[in-house]
Image 1 (cartoon, rainbow, N blue to C red):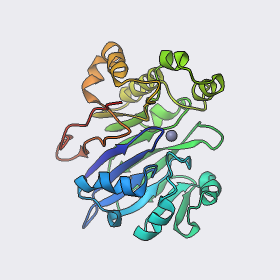
Image 2: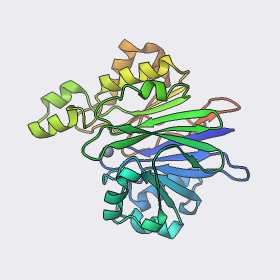
Image 3: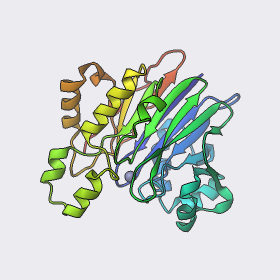
Image 4: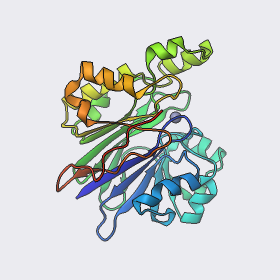
Length: 277
Ligand SMILES: [Zn+2]
């Protein structure tokens, strides 16, 4: 039994992650978010040996355009891909052109493929909110949370026992404060309904790690203007040196390597690509 995943791209210009789940006969391929164009997504999937026809479903964290690229309205139909999204996001997603007959809204826990259970976790983000996922594939667990203005109190408990945690680490607070961004934008990002700072992400990682044996920590959605992977590494080196070797910092432009969880060993086929922002 194994679960593998690769973050194909993450950031305000498009988010997409590939999940590969063991199936009885063949692997089950799922995307979390479809924020890159279909063409770019397929280009990044090619080295992994995955085509559009292999994708069964897209899990949507929320229907913002960096998570739902308009090109997927037609591409999902072409490839026969179903959308799995929160019922709270259904109306805006349909308004954005997502086909109703391909949409399967969830209200709570749901199954994904033959062996996987997904528990959604509501995250505060703008007016619509975002959804995090605890993906349990025969006991192998991945926690995934992006676009959250703050960490819900329940998150460390809900993500207990994960082997991998993928969580947003959007901005460095000093860079954000010192940026030339307008005050309203800084308030939106830092005000609890926007994005997580590196410090908030670190605290969440430590809280989850206290309840788990986390092998991989994948940091998502870095701001190109207000973050720097070197700052994140420095932060972990000071505050959580025991976790430094487990972190992968995602990039907008470059997929991470495929990270493998579960039997026979929690190893990577190839080392995760470091971000060059
Ligand atoms: Zn986003």
